[in-house]
Length: 141
Image (cartoon, rainbow, N blue to C red):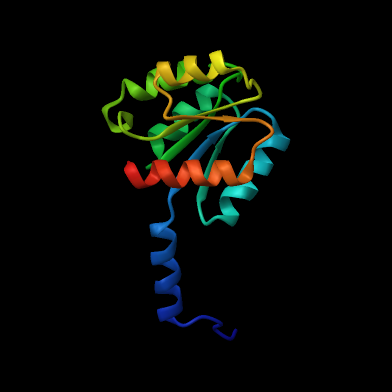
């Protein structure tokens, strides 16, 4: 079988994968998860998916995560519960964690930020705002 990539090509690809920022996305709605995954992967991020809060904690404990996107209303454990547990872990104390929610009420945003979220993204997701918010947070983390 003909080798299509040189060892140098494979080395560049491996280094590129190592440099990719890893984003944990916890979202219980498959369509929303697919959209967010597509947005993030097209921007060059590696996406780690979780369908509920408990799975998010399990994946966070097994992976090096650069940023977390948490739906606030998930089964098993909501976004606030996940946030509380992640923030109690010293390795996540300074990790950017964004709230993701269908609620656009200013009081909900204030509550999320007061609880310790690094930012607040409303659904439907504004792609430009999501990307800019993530870039901003990843630069300061």
